[in-house]
Length: 613
Image (cartoon, rainbow, N blue to C red; front, side, top):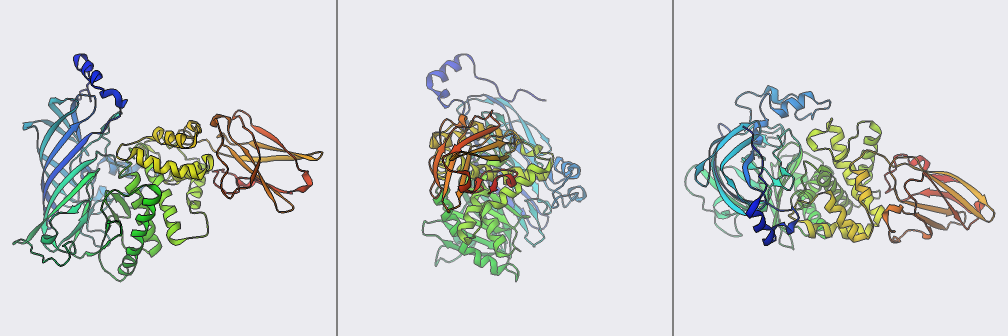
């Protein structure tokens, strides 16, 4: 049975909300959720039972007669959408491949809802793969709060993708996407996307979680431990005596305020290191101490605080009092206040993955765009933040974004590029998705500094954080921040670089002597227009710049520190395929002419960007 997903507000209620100013938000709102869960884990069967009380507030102007829950673990069953997609896509993720299709009944994952009530009354629900469709007998009106009571059963799949048990490194439990999670509803409606292994989108909520598990297990993840002197394992207060309750099991109590998800990991072999930073943030590291892991994880404790400090200064103050780096999963994966990272890495790789996943604390955890719909605003921005952070930590001599530009150039020349506006689940190949989301997304932000100036871009990044934290912004919101910071019109940049696969290619066509002057003609070969920084180097070693902003920018970026002096600034209409400028220097005085010596312009053919004379 499929009914309308949301009913519009009408009649008398419309008049009421108009007079109350509800529509002053111009359609933007944030749903609210508060989860209370009690989980009992059976480490022999790898199954768990749970109860969930979800307090849900509908802050939208719509009446909701249906809701949807994600049941992510159901993806790890033969014949699931994730299984079918992995076996049909041209370039499957090697971690998945056909492994799901071969899982035995005691190896699959599942989430089964055993009962569900809203405000004490049974509701009708139907499990459809990784989505629970719920029909409500009483609709949820705008600006009202309801309570859902649920009991459920889960089985942890063998480790395949992100979540699972008994990983290749021996981690018992990586518990991500493990509970029935309410889908997000925003101004674009419901986002009940089936899980095929890509991105996530969720409601900010408060999580109060109790996990009962065998005593030897050490836990970590999202949230603050509320009973440290009972669970011990390094969480207890300094000098406190650990007094666990009697019995073979221990209940870990976590609280996580204002987060979009809750991840936890557990292993009886975990070593727990922690450090309290000067700003009060506690850094937790949990890992299995082995000869190929321990040394680098001990060193990592020096780098994680440095990364938090750098990102807080340049991208916005980290808003939580804890961050945990935990060995687990199948690579690196971000979660609120924490990350799962495989442990057997060299130091540079370990720090690099930590930095990338930490960057998600800004762009997935707090900014929290719909990363399924705008993966480049999450993965790309996190990649950008991680690259700058790694450059600060290790201080390399080369351009920290060089790898991102190279990845984008390979994509643009591959013939497989798709627009960055493509929903993450619907890219034709994993390769095109990854290169677009990670590499081209990072280039988008780096190239913004070329267009408006790096000072304005960097101020805009902080303004973006302060303006849109905890508000689910979209691409338009980011562009408007940069427009306000720079005073320039930038919609064209988004429209070309995000919504199309048109590429940038400018070249120096010719230089001619004009008496005591020189005429330089540039040409636009690619289909995407861009402003041009043209640097002229003279035989005496001096340099000057000709700046050619696009007319549709409606202004100019300011002169940048370290750049040659500008001698000419002229608009270049995007309709004109060539542009000729005249300089007051003789042709025989010119040594070279070069488009963008800083290599920030994502020009796919740099060979025609410089001419030597």
